[in-house]
Length: 355
Image 1 (cartoon, rainbow, N blue to C red):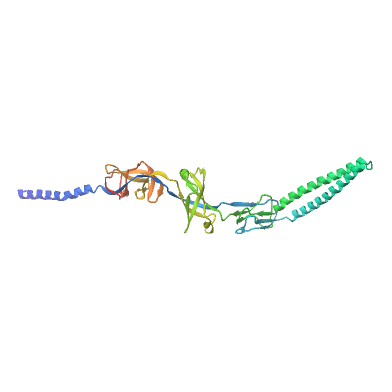
Image 2: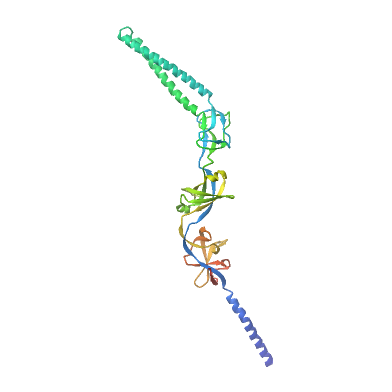
C-alpha cells in the first residue's frame, strides 16, 4: 500500500469517528428519562369514602295474632294502613256470645247478692228478737257469700273476654304499607302466629358497610351524599354501629334520608354513598403519581442523585386529585408525576419540577 493510500484511509477513519462522536454523546444523554416531579405533602384531609348501601325502613314490623281464632279479613300487600288502623280482623262471634253470657251471669249474681244481703240482715234482726234460728241466718249468709263470689268470678271473666275481644283486630303500630301477607281470610290460626309484615315508607335510612379502620373518624350528624340513578340526596349520619364484622372487617353506618327521598326511593334499593370522615394528618401525593401494576401499587421516588426508586404504597384516602398513602415516604420526598410508568429502579432521570 502506498503512502497516499494510507493517509487517505486514516483520514477517512478519523473523519468517521469525529462524525459519529456526537451521536454517541447524545445516546449517553438520552439514557436519562425526562420526568415531572412534585413533593410528598403532609396535610389534613377530610375525605369522602365511596361505598355502597342498602335502603331500609326505620320502622318495620310483623303483625301477629293475639288469640286463637279464624281470620275474617286481612289487608293485602300494598295497602296503606294508618297508625291504629286495622290490618287483620278475626271472627269473634263466639267470643262475643260468651261475653254476653258472662254479663248475664254477673247481672243475675248481682241481684242475688242484694237479695241475700237484705235477707241476711232481716234474719240477723229476727234472731236477736228470738224469732229466727241461727241455722236460718247461717244458710242465708252462705247464699250471700256464694253469690258475691260468683259475681266476682263473672266480672273477672268479663274483663278477660274484653281483653280477648280487643285482640279480635290486629292494628298497625305506625303509618305504613303492608309488604307481605302470610295468612288468608278463612284460615284458623293460633295465638302468636305471624300474619303480615308492615313497613314505614316515610322514615327511611341507608345502611352502609365501611372498613373498620375508619370507625374513629365517623361523626354523627355529618352530611353524607346518597346517589341513586339520577337522583342525589343529602343524607345525615345517625349512628355508627361499633360492632364490626370479623369476616369482612367492616362496621355499619346508618344514614337518615330526607323526607323528599321517600317519594323516589324504596326499602331494599341499592345506593351509592359518599361517607365524610373527620380530618386526619396524612401524607398525600397526586393521583397521577400512583402506578397500578399487577405486582403492586407504587410511586417512583426521585432521590438526591436524580435516580428513580420504586416505593410500594397503600392507598388510604382520596380527596379530589390528592391521595393519602402509606409507605416508606416522608414529607418533602420527590415523586414522579408524569413518566413514572417508564421508570425502573435506579433509572437516571432529568427532572422537571411541577408548577
